[in-house]
Length: 429
Image (cartoon, rainbow, N blue to C red; front, side, top):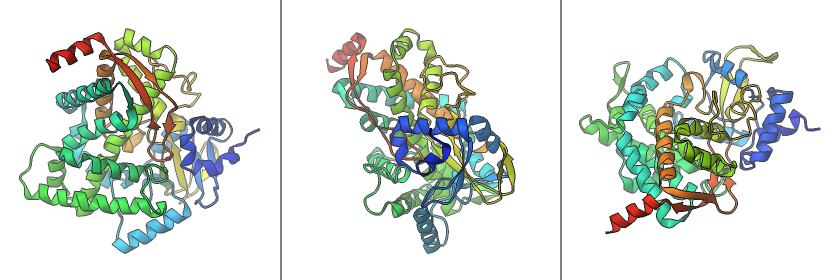
């Protein structure tokens, strides 16, 4: 019989996320046998793995007890030592985004752009979102067979976010490469070449150089309506944002702002195509698109975990968490909790209520979730309207990352609808 401690090494690893069946076996065992599990993996600092949704939410309700600093993701001993060396060499942190902040700073910095991502403002972006969706679905139809993740999904949310930041399109490929290297430092095909323990720090330095230059240019120019200018001219406590925090703001928007959505697009399409009957049902009942999108987010759960550090002793499900302990909130597991979801492994486009935590919970809940929902709804509505059939071709692959991840490879074949074919003929004429 498999016991929870059998998974200690894999709990701390990146590789298990490239094997969904093994990952689900691990989390199902932990939720059943030891949902608040003290994990001791070789080469890693020990930590508590929290796998049930009620416990993840309970931790999120106490941001004063479970803080985001000094680190937000699991690190092995070597990575932790390298991070200390790198920060010592630079005289401070490599980046300091809202992910790394606690209140009162977190509240102040989040408030700078929170209104920008509210539904009313997202509605004003509909033309940008629609334009990008139409162009990329058109590319899919023109090619017939495509690798969806690298040719479509990574570009769609990237183009939207970079449009908001007013970053030239010629620079999008460079920023995409940095994002993939930053968020998947262990994946053999996405990581930066060389010792992967230092790869993330090297990427952070490149981000700092790129966005530091952009910040200086935006501050030297008058305030405009784009998000990049808004951040450059923003103030906290009456003062301009410090260089580290301003550049880090750009970094979090450039990474979490699009990579989570692209991961959800890939995995969402995969589950829609591989769950028998669901694609046909969504075509027949387009009013189910909003609930289908939520199910895509739940199944993909692109942010795999965050780490919190206990500031004082706390009891959770009978376990004594001590001050200084690291606590890993396993969001992917929490969104498959059997006590919350009926048949959680089943992909149902009409699932409701769908109380997933794919966007996190509490003060650190995803700032851009309204934009992610709008982008996904627009893209999949466009895709289904302009295609007659979509099918998976070959074997799909998943990213080896315990930070942000999902599908890495999804080859698909599409057949255009008659209306879409007519549109192409009219454009050509």
